Image (cartoon, rainbow, N blue to C red; front, side, top):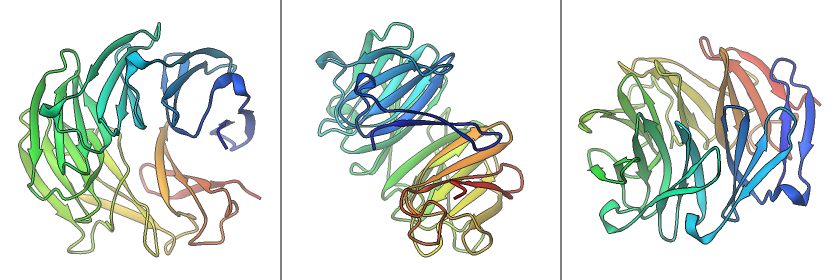
Length: 299
């Protein structure tokens, strides 16, 4: 509904809803925090910056120089905000977090951005997963230089990226697995699937890392789930789904980490009688054990 909701993580209490025309929210697709500010990526090729403490508007970032084009993700790199544009001309846009000023747009045939879906940052290097080009592209975000492109090696439809313990992990929907790539050499190290029933992968997409561990969302199927494995060894720890607890997962779309807990966003309640069946739900679980803490809304 083109708005931003504020929720107290400790209690799950609803605090505020921002959605007036002044903010410029239009089908927001991603959000990132940097210092005291929040940056909201909108589907209409704009970014809204606001103050996290009181929700006041700081600025709207819009203009042809940014080359925003169907943006799908954003992240931070120092004092720079990076935006991933899916296209029709895929690209990476960088702008100053403090001033909103345009810094760089990385695009062109050498990068082979066709339908980039996700990215992650390691130092000043960015790893971009591209579904249509079936590749993972490593770029120097300071200079815009192409470093390396990984094609093949078990990739078929890369859709999520996370970085931990010096490794880049890529979720692949088509193979129902993950691919491990060295963040330093770009060498493909391993491919992991659910062949032995240890991971629970089924068309995995969204990923997030604590540095030592990786969490993967399997959004579809009869029992959507979240899987945890080691970022250094790929050892699987657990996978949680609707059949081993009231997690109410359905069309999992986003992760967030707060302290020792993991928050999971579901876009619907189609696979279970969720408290928020029509509008989706938020599930909070333990990073360590995967134990359910709470589901929102509660009524």
